[in-house]
Image 1 (cartoon, rainbow over the protein chains, first blue to last red):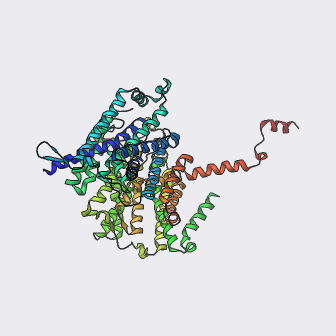
Image 2 (tube, rainbow over the protein chains, first blue to last red):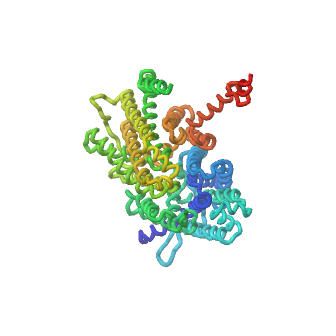
Length: 287
Length: 329
């Protein structure tokens, strides 16, 4: 099988995983203007929760969902008791989330040790699937893409088709006016933060069979989420979706073609976008 | 009073190797001063310009790497230091041109990206940077024939650089240019309307900040005689920012106190507390939530509040009614 075709397939799968990670980051950043630097830690926390749950006899998918719920609850607590105290203070939010990420990293090291823990691929998704006549592709990676597309569709439906989504969008556009018409914007903020955190935790388990879980996973994933959201534009789900796949390709092809400059390949497009179009590819210009 | 305090502090700092004695603690003091130089440089941007950089470890590391590579390709230390500082200022200019496209969060994000590019190059461009194994230099410079190989010698050299940095920052901040820099932080549009070139003021502040970050990077290189990608990681930038914020932004003493806090936490507390990283994170969360102005201004506020409570109420100035009564008698 053609090497670049394999790379392309891996890029798409990695892009799907990145979307699961960064959709929450995009929502939190877009709606609440909170640069959530714990996002990588939430991803790692979810992955570690997943390993413990699987160890206690949970199946893969239930473990992913329960880990996601656990991280969502944790995110809700962080928002309610810490970030709530710092409305509009971006610098303070950056620092609190950074401090928290140190704490989470150290707590995980204490609880789960320093050795990488791998998460087994669910049995039904092992092996490869034939696409067309000659291209065989790992089934699990196809499943990731399917999950990402499902989550993207569900998020789109939530934001565009439900009353909750309409209220969230109202909160984004004009929080003061939304409050006046009786929308509890602060409750929405907690919901959005929990949702974003939960998605990151869920993504951590889903990514487990590919990445495994190790100390430092948080620092590896956070910059990727940043790049995705800056490329795509903050607060835009479409942007996060497209950005994820762009970054998936840049990351995989960069690693394979220019291993020495892989990170330059990854971050340079982000810089160019920031300089040329600061609101991101799909972001709306804000005043 | 103030002069006496400064003179006493200077005397204590200059004689520190004599009354501390132990090499380990002298080295800790060198580290504190080295990071204080870094934090003072970063504070020019964070505190006085209101621009939060999360990529300054990139500049710090560029200086250290440039210095190490120049020394290893056969240049003498003097040339290497000048060359490394020049490279750092050029890099700072490049950083500034890109990062000043945005303010607020945009600025933070661009500096993160720039820092990560530097990290990626240091980590992956193995043919130049030796990747994760880092680059080492075998000797320290010998200015005027004085040896810096032992701990006190290096401490005094670091102290001199630190004092120059502190003096330069103090002069910079008190100058009309410093005032205009604070103006661009508080009222950028008004400054623009008054005819100041806001972009240029910020650009120059970035260069100034970058220069001292580079100086700190060189001190770091010669202190450890080694530099690795760890130095330019996002956590390193975060740590530097935490030094500035925890001590108190836009003060001279704040970044120094912050540098001392972080270095002491890292080196001393880690010997007693196994989970010092956790404690460090917790301290910063507590500082940001409960002492948002930083340790130095926060402690001053707490001190004033306490002394105001302790002072007997009679000491308060007599009100107009009391004075009228006295006049009437």
